[in-house]
Image (tube, rainbow, N blue to C red; front, side, top):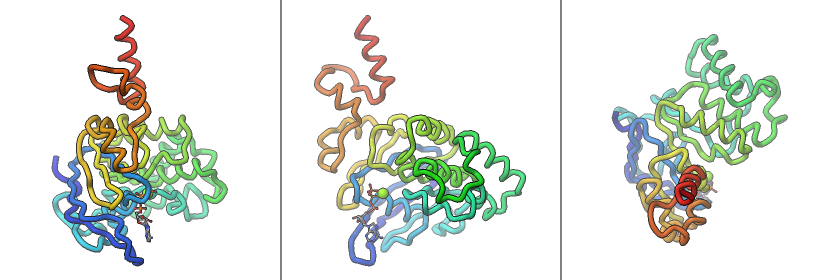
Length: 266
Ligand SMILES: Nc1ncnc2c1ncn2[C@@H]1O[C@H](COP(=O)(O)OP(=O)(O)OP(=O)(O)O)[C@@H](O)[C@H]1O
Ligand SMILES: [Mg+2]
């Protein structure tokens, strides 16, 4: 155990003067699965960039693994999936893009090749590996970008909208890869539907870029008024069962709902 990320009073102003994140303080423990949610423009991606050390905050600090504030020193331990897959794919072929991280970190070629093979199988990328990135569809690019982050097996994954463009089949495959990840996962997303399957804790960012709530998935995703005040709605399953269920816990997932209905029938 231990803290993998400790952010203290982070504020970030873009050069045009707009404040994207405002006085954010949070800690992430080793092995946690956390979703950072918020409406469009609330500052999730900016927070991810700051936590990942890709932009320096205007104020505040980020400490990694209880030992350093130098993000460069932990570059091989923190994997950052940016919202736009085009930011990753810049080599001549997708294979080179996926091998780029391991190569930069000095992982031996044989181990890197094996890792690329495994990820290509998991994400059905084999037919795409020798293509240039611009010849991929949006969902294919997203799968390749995820592979390029997972390729160097970082302990901490900071994933911005990993499901944005992928279809249900690949969403399930990515979900499995993420839930089987042995380290820490922080997911940044405005979509609440898949959070119960991927996270245990939720951090809600308000429209002004500050942290509004930090709690369990159930407490936050069933709090309709809190979500509404911050431009969000509960997952469909919660909305459906609200007002129908007069006792017990609102189902968060299809599986919860199925169990509830089966119990009712008995
Ligand atoms: N490069 C930039 N320069 C100036 N303002 C920016 C820049 N990038 C983002 N912003 C602004 O900062 C705020 C936070 O943006 P950010 O991308 O972090 O939001 P987000 O929560 O990730 O939104 P989304 O759900 O749409 O991905 C927004 O008001 C946005 O317009
Ligand atoms: Mg974003």
